[in-house]
Image 1 (cartoon, rainbow, N blue to C red):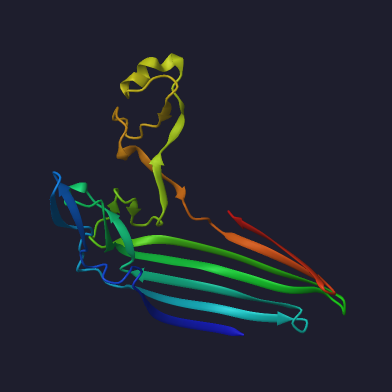
Image 2 (image 1 turned 60 degrees about the vertical axis):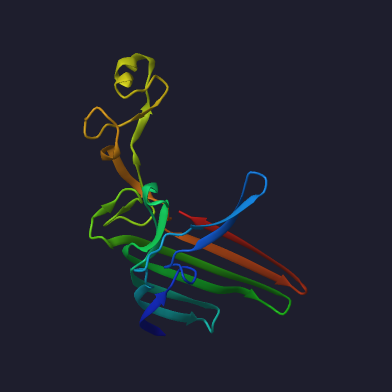
Amino acid sequence: KLRFSYGVSGNNGVSPYSRFPTVANARYLFGTTSVVNTSSVTRFANKNLTWERTNEFNLGVDFELYKGRIGGTIDVYNRRTNGIIMNRVMSILNGFTSLTDNVGSVNNKGIEFSLNTTNIKTDSFSWNTSLNVASNSNKIVSLADGSQRDEANGWFVGQPVGVVWTYDQVGYWSESEVADAKKYGLAPGSIKVRDIDNSGTINNADKVFKGSLFPKWSGGITNSFAYKNIDLAFTVTTRQ
């Protein structure tokens, strides 16, 4: 059976009233008898905060063989989320360290596969296997402010959410490299970082993309056995 679907869904992603500031009340004792009531803002307001909107299409196939002894599904999807809601890190000079905001657009695409088999089935014994494998890739399509990168939050257009953006560590400074290590304010035994732009200082210009926090693919397999009134099952999962 062939399936195809397309839809648009919304997701608020945060608790109600998150676009408004919140106020906390407190009481302080001054001296031994004076009690003062105070109020303070505990959440930064963002009146432009909106729901996420996700456009997605899915193409799938359901199949069965040998009178249902073997069956499974294959799904391919492409999902575009606009106005994705995340916590944006900002300067403490604002009075807060983060803000819930619509930070940009992200595209997810991937494939999912599942297989179910009845390996043995008799009046007193049965053995069934379930296998599933999934692979997903995501990348930032655009940022809300129109920029190509937000280094404070680690967001880069064309790179996945959760990209590993860090220094290229190439070893340790040795005893024979005292003078070279001193140029960077380091000593033998410290981690040696590649100075990509040869500026003589280590800063964000020397960081490189080294992968993603998310697996390239994941999967699992479950085997279940039953003999009369006794049953046993075990599952193995992996993330690669």
